[in-house]
Figure 1 (spheres, rainbow, N blue to C red):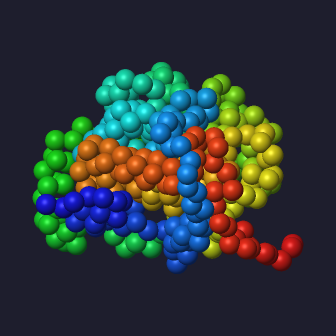
Figure 2 (tube, one colour; figure 1 turned 180 degrees about the vertical axis):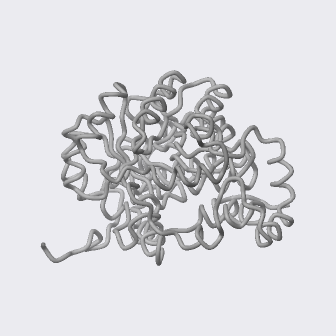
Length: 389
């Protein structure tokens, strides 16, 4: 019996239980994967200051994101194809997040639909929007999120053009998997995954199939999706989406101080410092490296969150102490989901929470809001010195 004590344990179980194409989809970045790897390794460069003789008996990890009370400063990030990692994956992850007291964000490219998740949860979740050329579809998608009582809209801004992810291309990534000799050979070894998927509510993109005219199978879906990401997206269009939603809005995918200033001027409630998990512009800096410059740029005018590279409670603490209001996990909860379903997501959340709580105590802090740069040992030139344009 495997004793699970950290996220890496879940990752090993996950790798053994899901088809290769879906493992590679999660555990890869674009091109050389430099940014994908830097997201994690740059956290390792920041060290912690241990403090002693501080009363830790009444500490709390509770915090807030865009005015919502949360059990720790963390949310589940939107991850496409989550329902291919485990049968009814989005539903299971959403239920685990709800029970734990942290937000769950449903991806536009989810397998389970907005309505599916709403049917199986009790509290509002967040919805992530990809901007597409089909304006009627986008309007109807936003209305569906409103009808499901989603409490925030997360607009992803860094995927106007899809970054090249070599492994996905070589694996022929699709939902459901195309039955080639290569995939059949791999699927035979994943019988547990396959058995559960036979009884899954859906095996195609639930927010799209049945909601777009002419899209009824994987072929027509692939053709529609390939043409739909809106390359003409600009700040004016983003402003219109914010007005159309008329509720809490988070803008995701910002990695430049000037873009962060623009987001604050538009009136969004929060931004997410993110490089799409290293899956878009390879060679960009890690999220944690860019965080200080973005915080300096917005000067507290907008709530700043961070995703990319969070694999432990210590990573969460480092991001908060460096100035982020909260953080997101994507891969970390997917490892748990693929390994053990809803129980695995809960296990991942419990481990990160315990690591965060213990580390906060050993750093001499009792409240999340008291964390700051005084808790960290930051290398000189951590943000990098670059030639001016």
